[in-house]
Image 1 (cartoon, rainbow, N blue to C red):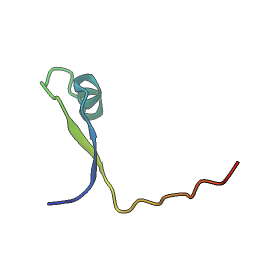
Image 2 (tube, one colour):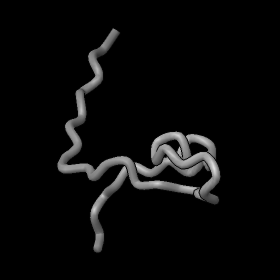
Image 3 (cartoon, rainbow, N blue to C red):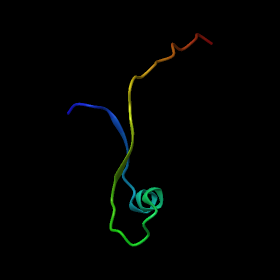
Image 4 (cartoon, rainbow, N blue to C red):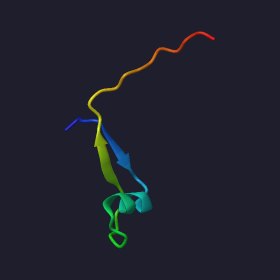
Length: 44
């Protein structure tokens, strides 16, 4: 509990990822985030 995940919340994309055309999917977890690296913006 409390993990950050990447979720596809569009039914057609979720079905394509799972390879199931006739399953009533609405969302699927496609990844678990281990860490987030942030890049500092440079002054232009």
